[in-house]
Image (tube, rainbow, N blue to C red; front, side):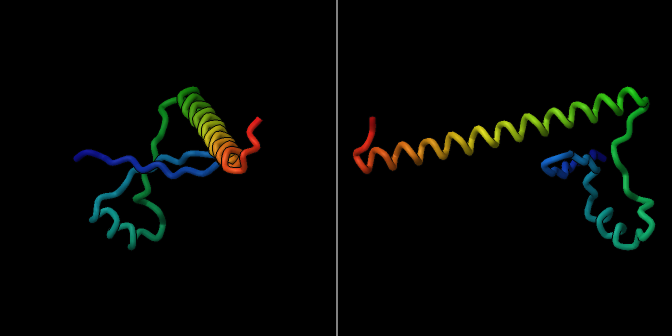
Length: 89
């Protein structure tokens, strides 16, 4: 059985959790204590730190990429507005 990985993201962190099958999802309805929750684990503290640091830098890179895209989009809109008004320098 192959495991599907689902990544839950927020602006500050990534949480990687196994994505359950249909029956896994149904069984989770009865899992009130969270016994079936499986998260990726690391064999050493150094590996856990390395994964966390890598995740943090990916989040920083994603934030920078989104910011650049927003800036470029705003600049394109600004240029189109200037062209349509005939006020290009």
